[in-house]
Amino acid sequence: MALAKEARYPLILAGAAPLVSGALLVVQAWLLASVLDSAIVGQIPRQELLGGILGIAGLMLLRACIGWAGERAGADASERIKRHVRQSLFQRLVNKGPHWSRGKASGELASAVVDQVEALDGFFAKYLPAMAAAAMLPVAFSVLLFPVDVIAGLVLLITAPLIPLFMALVGWGAQGASRRHLRAFARLSGFFADRLRGLSTLKLYGRAQAEAASVVAASDALRQRTMSVLRIAFLSSAILEFFAALGVAGVAVYIGLTYLGFLDLRWTPLTLQAGLFCLLMAPEVYAPLRQFAAHYHDRATALAAVTQIAVLFDGLPQEAAEQAAEQTTQQTTQQTTQQTTQQATQQGRARAHAGKSAGIAITALRVDAPGRNQAVLEDASLILSPGEHVALMGPSGIGKTTLIEAMARLRPADGDIRIDGVPLAEWSEPALRQRVALIGQRPQLLAGSIADNIRLGRPDASDEQVQDAARRACVLEFSALLPQGLDTPLGSRGHGLSGGQAQRVALARLFLRDPGLILLDEPTAHLDEATQARVLDAILEFSQGRSLLLATHAPAVAARFGRVVRVARGNLEEA
Image 1 (spheres, rainbow, N blue to C red):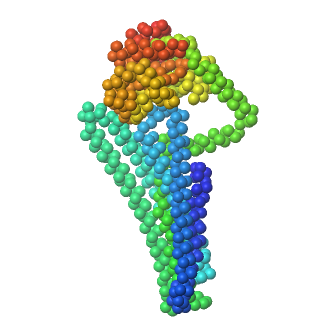
Image 2: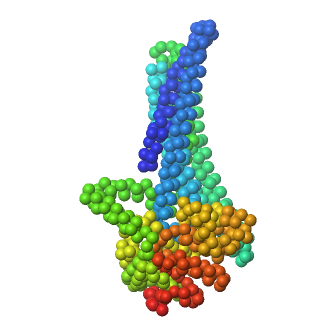
Image 3: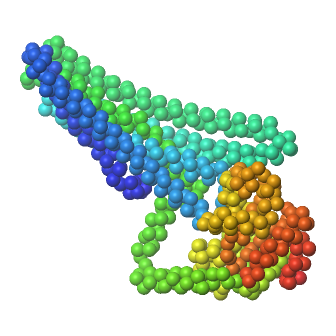
């Protein structure tokens, strides 16, 4: 409900549309009963009733237009809110960084951002407008019948509230079933995405049939939960139809027996116009409740989706935004001024250092890893002077990648890390990414052409600059053999390129940028000796006037550096 303010006016229009349509319905029903009474009892000619008939047709057309406008407003409100939620979740993914996302199943995160946010659609587009109509129209219609016939109004007024009462009882079970269904759906999404990503490995190890059976079993469990949700939905609809039929039948029987003379509970005779008006309005008393019941499960689905999102993302983005806004309003003018001054100073410092090498100083660094009793790095220290080139060596799993990620603020760490004398925590994200360039062991390539993936380093780069970066990274050596060259499309995660080719594409991105500090993690691990030498020459040439830290296993690569640092026993030692 806190998200409703993101689309306040469309939601107001969507909620007001059924109320206005209901008011016009009363006029339409009274006019129709009057026309029928005049034609049957008064024997008035058809020509004299033409005005009333046209009025009924005009009211029907107007109500249809109002209903269409209300549905469009509800859909617009829903799309605005879903877009806001997806942007908030994506921002949270970015803010938490890759270290946090590595601990989550990518399929579950994707399911939350796509499928579970989509579950909010019915709540805002259908449920909220239907709830407003169901809360006001049945009571209003029943009260309007009192001046016409007290008995008919009482029958409808007594039976109508029973529907939401029993629906609420059913709704408790529906919410729990929907939560279990969405949780199973999220697990299945993550399970299927992981198996699909490792399909070639499973095939090589002869596990394809076994995993296919696991997918079938998980799908069957999801089917059973889906059917349980549908059973509850059908039960709520059956309850509604039973009480609605009971109320309409009670009014119809009462009016019929009154006309036949078997009942005489009125002070005045029941006219045809009054009886027809009661019969026409009786189903309309339950129509808003029927519409509300049709979308009642949307509320349970939305609540279950919100619960699942909160579990996956460690809380709801909207709650975090409200807390941040509340803290901001409590700050004094002096604190705000100091923050503004500090940001301006930092931006000015970043501009002043642009194009210059960066110095980094690390003191008493400690980095823990999940599942390990001992810290990966403990009390580690390193000083990298501006313009210095250092090779980082050590066996696999010793902490080279951990150190590089901590220096780039991609992994939480304790201790003091300073870039250009400024604590790492005080760097804004744009300024830090502009100042520091990191290429990991498994560079991320996206679906698109090779040139598009290179241009990610600098989106405004010209074709000539992309071509030059590809040449320096030895990308042209293999792209020239492809039919479309640098315009050759790649699949997701760089499907179509080998590990060494993907690494060279990532290096080409680096050559489009102007960082002060370059962090490279095994950039030549997948290359043959000849290509490794050429790529390393290009890296060292590009790094002239810049600080460079390169992690490697190869002694031949480390020999090209004037300084070598080894990671050993959780510390850093000069080689």
